[in-house]
Image (cartoon, rainbow over all chains, first blue to last red; front, side, top):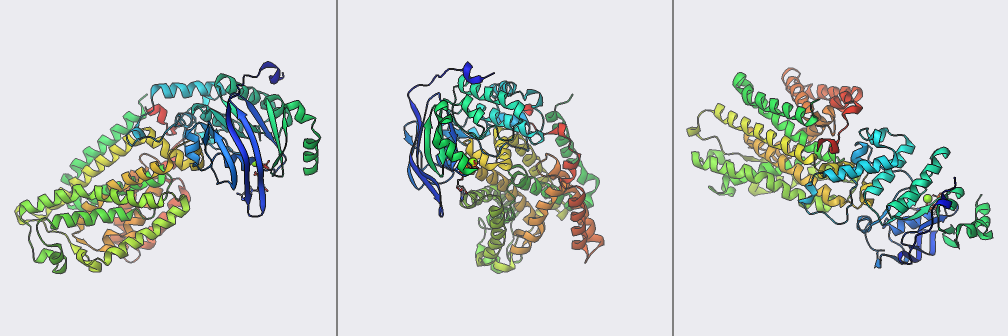
Length: 260
Length: 343
Ligand SMILES: Nc1ncnc2c1ncn2[C@@H]1O[C@H](COP(=O)(O)OP(=O)(O)OP(=O)(O)O)[C@@H](O)[C@H]1O
Ligand SMILES: [Mg+2]
């Protein structure tokens, strides 16, 4: 089954995220050098590149983990480069980390429930709201969608690695992002489960209307998932275009071969 | 099957019923019993901080001391000059009338929790931007610094401390006094346990746990982590302030380093009690505090000179054999805390 054959592009021309000439160095290491890319509403955009090419650094820059040296990052017509991590998240731009992050000390269901959308800072009174019936029901639905419903009362930390990844998706879905940045969603996932994962990402994009920007090393995955792909090497965008253009690009092939 | 809420409620009610009658059955131990409730409150407040929110504070003793001083000051200043009181060994020169004593006490106790919370809000907004270990070290310094600072304030008696108004003759024997403070301590426990349990069942509790388990994640999900952390500390300080006020009055004399800001005793003990009982569990702090208190009393009575060594040995044994605390040891996976189920 090739998932890309079953989904058609439903993108608009509205640019959701516009990264313009972003640069970031760590001491002498230039991790991002004038990187520009954009993501349109409804798209699935891929970000590839050899190890150390600056993909995660770019995510960190977009999400406010560190200040950028120069350039601009516009999300929904708002310059976000000076915003804090949480401020950016509250605007609907969420990310996952290269290492799966969940709340290991509470139940699976609680992980999802507590990830209810946080669109604004709660008042002191709102901080003591109880979980509503609707929130719990919604969390249970999402757990059914990712296939973890039966495990909902288990300690999240007791889940297997792959299940923790699924839980992470569930948490993200719960928080209703508009744009989701995924850092290597298939890393460490059993190859037999990868197709299912791709299908889930496509579902997230279509059913929940979430726009995706995905870092991925697995070429087969990104080719069947993404509508458009950017390729980074040595901190610079060396190529961008449709999956089949990227697949045949000499620059991309050289970058990967050169790195190996 | 009974819900966990119901079972916990039964446990809570049993505690309070036992608490009401036990001083009548063993009247000679009333002071020890009072300290048992106060220790439980200290453990509960520390657990909110260290167990639920995952921020190990070594300086919570500050709020205990602030509650204590706030209370004694408010017991004195409506009626006498604080400067003269602290200079002349107040209780020898001045006598509160019956009415004055109780008015001052009421005022002092009521204000103590709020004063402690206020300080927690200020300190929290300064240092709760720091993460785990840095915060812990900072609070360690804070605990020492505040004690030293208060030792330098002459109007509060400086390093030699300040005496608490004596129990008025018209109010009867010292047994009455002890009984009053015993029931205040019990009331504080009742309030503290109930309120903390209710709060932890809200999204506030769930969010504190999220911050504890992965603060980066929590932040990346849009949670206003600093606001939650400060509020957690403020609530912790609130009940600790009351505990300080009651303790000060029971001890009768407030020394800044050995009683109020006693980092080496109460300050460390409140942490040990939680670790012994089980961090982040509902009854862990209660059980830990009780066991700790019993052993501490026994060691201080029968092993004088070696009491600290014995206490140290006890701690090592517990940490080695019950690394998750006594309750953590017995808690199976099926008893995972479940916010969404308890709603
Ligand atoms: N916090 C940091 N401090 C110093 N150097 C850093 C930091 N983060 C990243 N770098 C450097 O920046 C470069 C890009 O790293 P980055 O993590 O963005 O690569 P990546 O494309 O995500 O690689 P991978 O595919 O291995 O995850 C690397 O040379 C890395 O050593
Ligand atoms: Mg990376």
